[in-house]
Length: 335
Ligand SMILES: [Ca+2]
Image 1 (cartoon, rainbow, N blue to C red):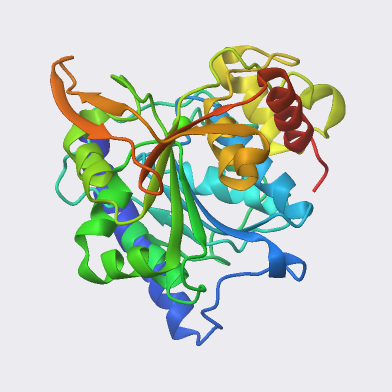
Image 2: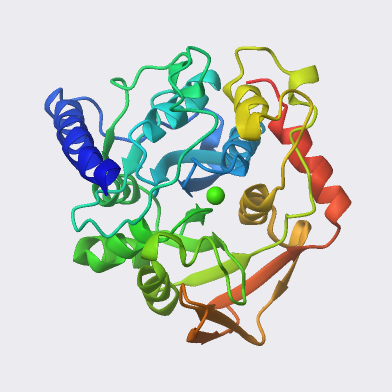
């Protein structure tokens, strides 16, 4: 509780002022667009980057895909509540020369975010933690996630944006409950890809007492929502130390996570979701039959949804080894 309350008072004014400053400067409000991005997929990445490190790997994959012209990363939503989360995301974006990408953070006004997660790769107050790596939080918007989403979506082509959620669904719940947010999602978003177990998820869908928000998003998302839950056995990030420089925050995060040191990888749930969002049926089998099932945080049945073509689906890699290799390749690409 204490952390939550402190966060609310520390982050809210900074974020609000930053958002105001960016608007007041009269700076071009258009999201950053790479010159090569004309045929690429506009993506918003929604992450809980804190406890586990596959969120870092998945952001690296998105930057790799952008380098290859396949993605235009419009912004990042942060659905955990660690006060240094935005700095870590910005440090990674800065390493890839995209430090002006807007970052939307969860505003815990209702205090409904229980037991925030700690991190091994930031917040330890060591000089070499990822939040202390090179970045500038004042050259990009850092604001309320709902406002950042609306700002990003309004300038995009209809039915074009893909949102990839690899953490909790609190930001997207708030976005749907905002009337303008809902209208923009309906008009501009092509697909939402969600990392979470199709049946009885016990982390992304229930942690922090957010199971009602999860149900709301799965029930009310106005377009296509596809779940992925494969990746536990796919270990990636093992070659970051050997193949990328010491100033790479992705490498640093993997070395610090669980205090595991160099040349050790981690499961790839979040990268699997990102790769599906961009590669689709080239690498994945889609399933539009059957159902998904949500349990509450006590493990009791709560909600069941039907899979249906174009509305609710499930996707898994056709070939785990091929997908794992592609993730490792993209995670270790130079900026
Ligand atoms: Ca995650």
